[in-house]
Image (cartoon, rainbow, N blue to C red; front, side):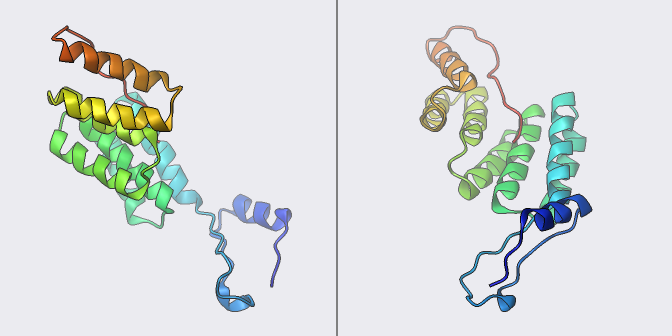
Amino acid sequence: MRLFNRSMVALACVLGAAFSVSADRMSSDAMPKLEIILRASENLRRGNELVIRGDALAAREVYARALRGTLTMLQRARAHNGLCVTYIMEEEWTDALKQCNTAISIAPNNWRFYNNRGNIFLETGEIARAQKEYARGLKLAPSSVVIRRNIELAEGRAQDIKSDRPQTTRPI
C-alpha cells in the first residue's frame, strides 16, 4: 500500500493537478480513489458569483461548461442546482424543474435543492407541492431561516394573502 502524506496532497492542490491513487499500485482493488478537481470548483464558484450579480445567462454557460468537465457527484449536483436557479431567475419553470430534479436525484440530502424546487412550485401556483418541498428541506436543515421564511410565504399564499417572492439561496 502506498501512503501519501499531507505535504504531497498540499503540493497537488497548489499545482492544480488532478491527483489520484490508482488501484494497480495498491495491494487491494477496494482501496479508495482520491481525486482533487480544482477547475470544476472554480467554474462552480464563478457560476455562483454570476447568479449573485443577476447574470443568469452567463452563469448558465459556466455551469454547463462545468458539467462538460470531470466532476464529483456532489459537484455535478451543485452544477445542476445552479442551472435550476438560473432558470428560476428567468422564470423558465419547466427547465428549472428538470435541473432541480436532477440535482435531487444525485444528492437527495441537500436542503437547498428542495428549497429551490419548492420555489418553482410556489411561483407556479402549486402551493401544496411547494409546502411539501419546503417540509422536506426543513427536515434536512431544521434551523434554516430561508426554509422557514418560505414556509410562511407558502402558508400566506394558501390563505390568499399577498406575499413576497420566496427567498432563494446561493446555488451551492
